[in-house]
Length: 289
Image 1 (cartoon, helix red, strand yellow):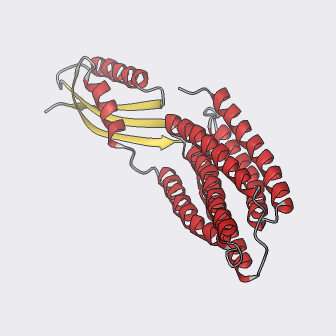
Image 2 (tube, rainbow, N blue to C red):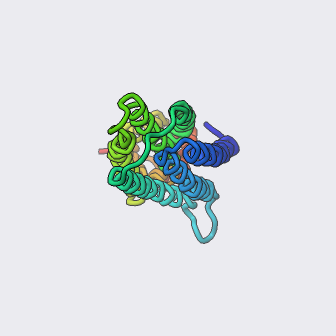
């Protein structure tokens, strides 16, 4: 399991990369006559703000339970994920508006050296996106997956701009707006992924059903406990990167209350040991038919 220090370091790296790329994009775009690159740099500035909010929300969600929040602060992680989804949609809107504006007014084709810069941006952003996405999948974080897709959306928009600039340079006069048309296509991809992140965030906020394999893992741990005949209901609520389990187990109806209590404790210990992401387990003892 990835440590909190490792995820924090990844968040700092995310912000630092965005700052460097923002300066490179705006500087090269101004010198190379590429408004698409300048707009991309301005969008990277919004990425810095978005990443700060997302990672701050994620770090706050890791705070332990306290008197005022007995179930911890995990829901902040879903809120941060929702913010990342909204930021993706906003970024798509800004890119689309700039692209349409540039299409409607004549402008010069960008300089050739803007193309390798954009290709470098695509490579850096995609690598960073994959690292953050891997971390998000490992710990089950909607917020980190949202931030990863924000970086990927930047890679997609930069890739689209690179294709457009290549077309503009190869086509010559009349093809100056090719990178702006390509940016519009990229916006569609960004919107789809923004909606996906928002849907996942709302699913977590509403305590939606978790994957079936999570339920099966809990049931397997419980049925392997001495004294358990079978399992009945199993409910799992995801809160941030944690899971809260409510489980009904069936036992011999002729055992004492004390024996049933001991079985419940053993079930809880086995479930907690089987999955470090399970924060708490509530075990109900039911008589087997």
